[in-house]
Image 1 (cartoon, rainbow, N blue to C red):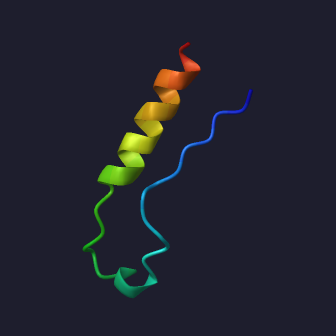
Image 2 (cartoon, rainbow, N blue to C red):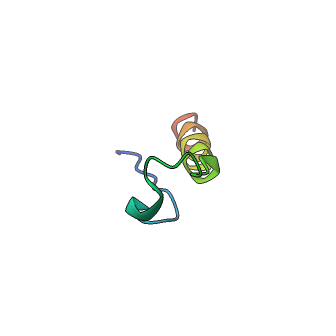
Image 3 (spheres, one colour):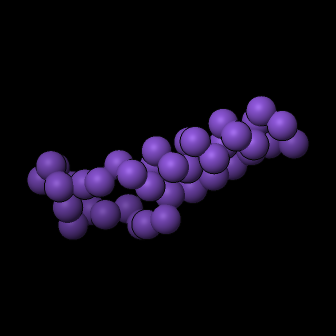
Amino acid sequence: PIIRTSVDHGTAFDIAGRGTADAGSLIEAVKLAARLAAR
């Protein structure tokens, strides 16, 4: 199987380049993928 996770937001073009983005959702998606891959 192929593991695919996704962040919980859209493209956020409105805040691109402003330095206000929060990487928390991406980090959690990567952690989930790692947990699933370990099974």
